[in-house]
Amino acid sequence: MPALEFLTWVGSEKSGRRLNDIVGLTQRGRRDKLISLQWRSCSSRQRRVSLGISSHYCKDSQAPAVESGNFYACFDGNWLLKKGQEVASNLNGRCIFLVGMMGSGKTTVGKILSEALGYSFVDSDTFVEKAVGGTSVSQIFNQCGEKFFRDYESEALRKLASIPKQVVATGGGAVVRPINWKYMKQGVSVFLDVPLDTLARRIADVGTDSRPLLHFESGDAYTKAFVGLFTLSKKRTEAYANADATVSLQHIAARLGLEDISDITPAAIAMEVLVQIENYLQGKNGIGMFP
Image 1 (cartoon, one colour):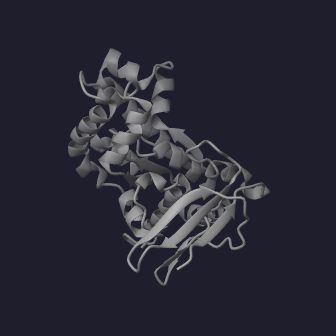
Image 2 (image 1 turned 30 degrees about the horizontal axis):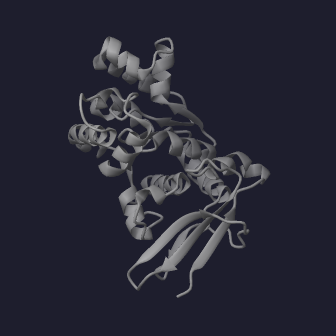
């Protein structure tokens, strides 16, 4: 079967310009470009979706859908805005709390979500850093210890939970304190579930110096990251299950036939988050955009 190509213009629609700029960001740092999503049939059981840059316009800007086993998609900011407005109308101002391990993309996805929902974006770690005079999280851990940081983190979540219309990217360990869930349950919590191998590769690429819980005396960056993440995940897995909704990148990749989870764009993840939030509000469990 010949390749089917679905393209979307990430451009200058006034209503979605800012969001489109974010969606247009790729791993190569390119913006205001054309994103193409190609679907190829390798066999009756195999599909492969690849992200690329194209010089064509999208003639069909319908929302992503799975139809008769084929993947028809056009990921653009206008669709995100439309879905975001629909979800926001049912949230009644409740905050969205993104939870997940370090490196899971909470900040990147959170910024896209905030634009789609018409919300503000806040990073709880940054909120804590400002509260202690601009000291970095890594310095706080080194100078004052983890308990000191966790106390400030809990206070930050208490304050943030009382402010409507915010997307909050939480620290990876925010889930370990039950009191934090009391605050986050005032809004809607979403767990970004990313495999440890993917997380370790992401963190290794930028280094572990800014990750105070991943400091080990020996080993390459990837090994340090993976061992540390594995240890932390055993302590946090049960806590993450408290989230109101879960977005599994492994599930999305498998359904799209992607071999590498890194090929899933932040925009696609944000779309799935919106769908899962909508499902949660409607009392539906596990029905995603990529069924």
